[in-house]
Length: 238
Image (cartoon, rainbow, N blue to C red; front, side, top):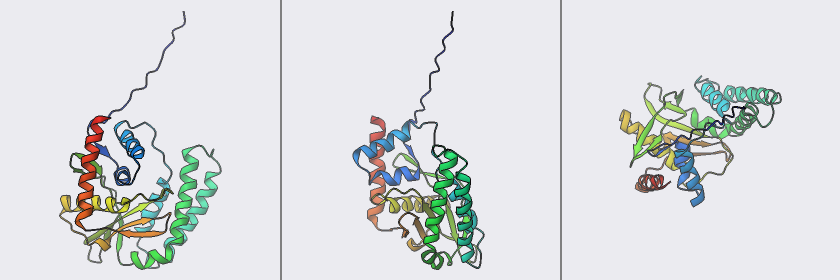
């Protein structure tokens, strides 16, 4: 008699509201269906996490952390890596993460190269360090990841700002950059008692080629708390 075994896949359920910084910052500007998908993705996370830009993020943060005196060297490095990644991608099937991470990361590097004239005058004001610390904050009962990609310092070694990259080709949602930077600023204040000027909190949107800064008006803080209140309410109903 055959012994038929059926493997039952276990479903992970996150009981308390918890979102990545990207999920949270995109929630407000999404449609009702889009908001529901974000919450479902957070409450019932799957085993598979797409890796399309990990290589680009690692290359960019490591290269900027070198703090070259000649800023053209950054973009020469990015150009070299982009060529290499495109060649490496050809070895893999286009349906695999090995291909997509290399191919999309090469595209992100090329996008950053196109921003060189805009970025050099901005980044030359800072000493840049990679941020390796995982972090999160609680806002109105919602846990939000709060990891900046890079930390910005002055010449004395004092941290004066932070930086976040946006890689995906999808159009930025309404208030996406502002909400992401607000979360990061709140985290810095709550954990290290650091208060940053808006102009020193940067959101680099590679697809559009824009550099956005934080907003300090009371409206963005109210929007953050109101959004978290809605997320907590809807989370429980899923």
